[in-house]
Amino acid sequence: REISDSSYFSKQKKTRLRRKPFTKDSEEEEYNYEFDDSLKSRLAIQPSDSRVRVLESFNHQYTNILYANNLWVWIVNKNVPIDYRQMIVTVKSQSCPTEEVNRLWKQGLILKQIEYGDGFWVITADNRLDDQFTTVKQLLRSSREFPQEALKDTWRKGGRVVYLTNCNGFWFVIAEEETSKTTPQFITVKTTIEGMTNELRLLWSKGDRVSSFCYGNDAWVALSEPRGRRKVRQKIYGSPRFPTEKIKKSYSEGRNVHSLNFGSADNMWAMIVEMEKDVVPQQLVSWNNKCPW
Image: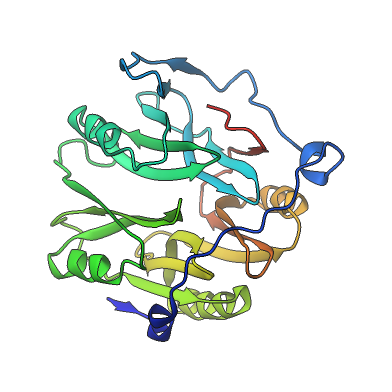
């Protein structure tokens, strides 16, 4: 388990996204997808706090939610088991929604992601379907600086990092404690998309797969691990405009969109797509300048 480009850690600085104005005649508006009738969600039991809204999806999965460049972007996977359950929690607050995260854990759900934008936190959690008889204990750690020690501490204790992101000026790490999976993990940090692309191509040539990909504090960050028996191939694309055509092309080639991010220093969108044997893409990538939940 290693962290590359350690020189980056000594030059942290707080930064804000340089956002472009959203206009009705922009390319994003022209291809702004709406939910189709097959995507079903319902309002769950609401907490007493009026700032909190809870939705439950029951035939689709939000695999990636992002707020960047003044846009909310979300990736929906429609190929889920019939008993799949996911909760989407939005919290109107500046402070980290620790109470809502704890409430989801008490319901026996697995925390998947956390994002912040335009005054809202968005949290997703679901029931674990790969091994429902295994008890999973998770930790959520946050810090202003890059969470180098949190990552090393997780690995030192036999844990596994499942998600890494940067939002609202904080780095967030979601980790599972003492898992039975002893897969080695690797963190790559690069200050340019070109540097990240070159590094990922090297990792892919060695049989690794990116599991989490984000941007924060003027750097691109990828969490990767060996793909094992999964026959998955990944690619990365960069674009100064929202990659509408790349998304369409990827679907036509049988690839799913794994993750999508925007880098303010590069002024670039970066998208990782993947193709897995016997898996047919059943996705929607949507975006809007308002929080949709």
